[in-house]
Amino acid sequence: MSPNISEHKNKLPHLITSIRILLAPIFFFSVLNLSQLDSIFIFLLTIVTDGLDGYTARKLGTTTSQGAYFDVFADFIWILAAFSAFSIVGLYPAWLIILFTFMFVQFIVTSRFKVPIYDPVGKYYGSFLFLTVFISLIFISNWINTLLTATIIIFSATSLGSRFYFLIKHEAGGNNLKEP
Image 1 (cartoon, rainbow, N blue to C red):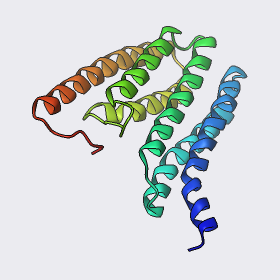
Image 2: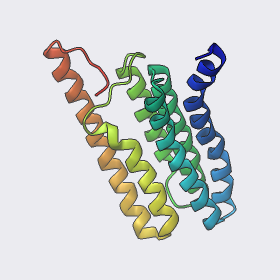
Image 3: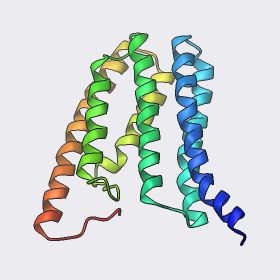
C-alpha cells in the first residue's frame, strides 16, 4: 500500500469524528430555533458518526489512544452544545454543564492522559447522555426533564463512585489499567 493511501486511511476515523464536532453548533442553533425535526435529524447524524468513527478505526486497524480521546472530546463538545441549548430554551438547568465538565475532566485526569480508562459504569455515561438528548427531543415535558435531570445526577454519582472504586481496586491489585 502506498504511503499516501495509508496516510488517508489513518485520517478517516478522525475525519468522521470531526464531523460530529461540526454538527454540535448546528444542533445548538436548531434547538434554539425550536426546529424539532431538524434537531432530530442532526442528532441521528451525530449518532451515526459516533458509531462509525470507532467502527472504521477498528476495521482499518488504526485505533489509537489519541483517537479514543478525540472521540470522547467530540462527545463532550456535542453534549455541552446540546445541554447549553436546552438550558437556554429552559428545558434543563445550566449547572448541568458544570457537572458534565467535571465528569469529562475527571475522566481525562484519572486516565492519566494515557490510554483512556473506562470503568464498568462510566463507559455507558456518554451513551446515557445521548439517550437523554433523544428523549428530550421527542418528549418535551417539564416532568420528563425533571425526571431526566434527577437521573443524570444519579448516573453521574454512580459513574463517579464506580470509577474511583475501579481505579482503587486495580491500583491495589497492581493491575495495569488498559482499555477493556
